[in-house]
Length: 208
Image (cartoon, rainbow, N blue to C red; front, side, top):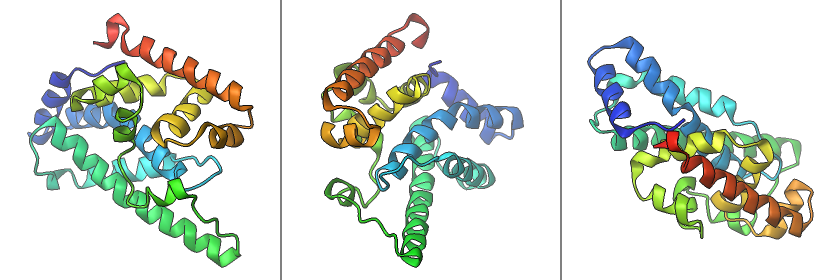
């Protein structure tokens, strides 16, 4: 389900005026958005698949508790604020993960592509820089980010994983194939089917 920018802006304004129901709805609409970013950020550091649900929950909880500290007024500023909180939590998560690995003698050094993302970049910007025409064009406008995140959340687990690894993290197909335990050719086919499915969801009549 896509989220019209006017609805997000309206809910934000109502929530800031003290409407508790509007605030709950606002956070619910942003859950998929935070989840897509969180999963990409966490997995960019770890070869094994990691459940980022705790990170999502922590981010939304902190944003809810600190809602009165949000000083912006637009939906763009709201999404940027959520990403800032998520980025801080992701860095803490990675720091804790590395400490635990060192203590057990099982620290995993990030690959070159993972070292390059040490600053915890926005994975949606990575998708916009890929060769995908339709998603890239949609991401040029911040109000479409929620629609993209919601569309990704509707895909199968395999489709979500291959998009996270290839389109968001920009890993080579060889690395994606290794992590998904598939052949390179099968991984490329899976990725192309995932892109086609994503574009069909984004272009569906009820997605506008």
